[in-house]
Length: 323
Image (cartoon, rainbow, N blue to C red; front, top):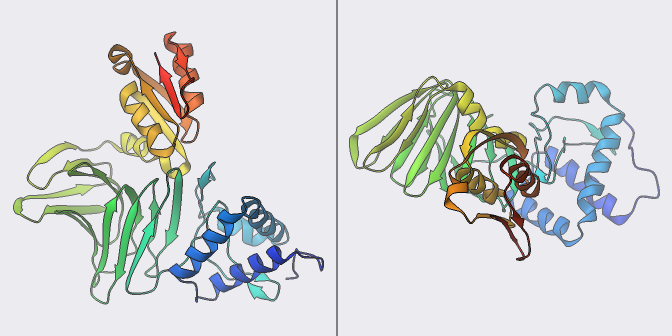
């Protein structure tokens, strides 16, 4: 396939083209991505250029685009990407990668690798074993794909894992003293203070605590549990709809269904530096329904205002105060 970029390409376009080709070559590393992210952050317009180049290329290959779309979740706003596994494609005589958001995913090699998302950033990362890891806002993760075990350490935040089946290499997510073990399944893990929340969307996982063998628990699709190092805090089974709502962040959304406003505000605050503060405890206890973009705290506040007749005060920088 010929290049979608003409002979008057800028130096930035040349650089992006080279990076896309390198990603698909299998030589992409964590250092490469860190350098690319730094380069993109220097000039915000570069992210738009990156997306435009990919869009131009995809337009020349509708068959490939249709194939990819079957494997991708809906795109979302802000720094959210639903980029799927890299596939070989022609671009300027080299292979290219599918890019649909504000960051680039890459395959991990064996050995420990650190990953981090900023506030408001959601990243979908294909792993070298065929699994896919989707990191939520403000999360920190260490990945080690060894010969006999696949080890993930969730240091902060939340992630959803689509685990490739490999009976010889269990997939283990460690959060402090709590461990979540799977072979081939899909589930999320979230830090909640000293406890861990586990949501299972498919298959079966097993949770256990390092210092208490009695806390071993088996979860299947539609189950939710909050597990501490010394106690089972909460457990729900057969709640697939609730699990899907809780994981709406994968598509860049917050799905509220009878959610107390205090909890809703906490969710929005996970994704935005502009924080929602509910001044009145009585208002904080009110329940609310609605589907909102994660990066739209103002829209949420206006919806609360219209529904409950409350006041919105934005006089203080960085604060949306609901009174």
